[in-house]
Image (cartoon, rainbow, N blue to C red; front, side, top):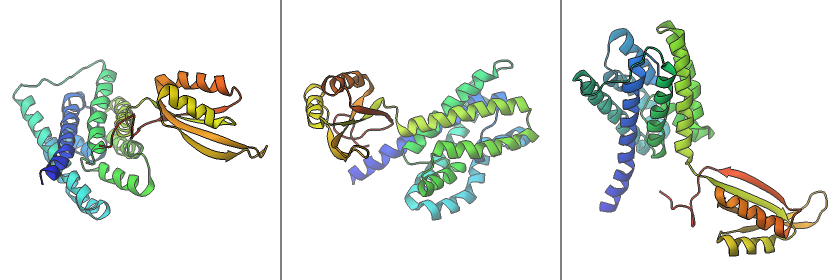
Length: 289
């Protein structure tokens, strides 16, 4: 029972932390500078500009219809995290609104350097949403749509959110100056990259594929000198018809130079392919979360 509670808490705490960062970005950088945000939250921001409606209330009310869609498509467990994320976002928005109204927090407001506001808005919003997504939650709105498309189509959540946000933010041209919309697009682009960065992992590993006639020798040397696991994959050259090996291993970026030296020393004619790796689980790297 305690293990189960700890497992749930280990996911919920980061989700709540992510929503807190997201709420901070909205109130500290976006709203004071009359920038925009995408999705349902963006509609809430427009309502705040036009009607003075508190963002904490509008985001919660606008998300209720999407809960019903998400419940059917994502299942009860994911929707539970979504509801918790949405409620958490509304809570932190309300707390920050109160802090600003009481004068405890002074937002960053500028009349000249909007690019700075846009950049920091993108970083904080992307960081917050990336943490939420990485631990299985959402903050409602287009996040639900993005997660559904990610599940069904395998699309990047950051790319889906970017596409939907561009459409929604385009509607903001009816309410705010076009230069603010352009600054907002910078913010949204930065946020989408941050989301993918947090989602995929900030790892500097590289996957190495070595096609060679001396696979066993190279594999042995890598194991001996670098203490890395190596997989030998039998292969046949399509043109020559000769039998070869594909030596496959994953190393940190700073180890690539050593590995290339090993390959060059044993088989200078080897064909080497190096791919960037976003996340690595397993011995020598990290354990599963």
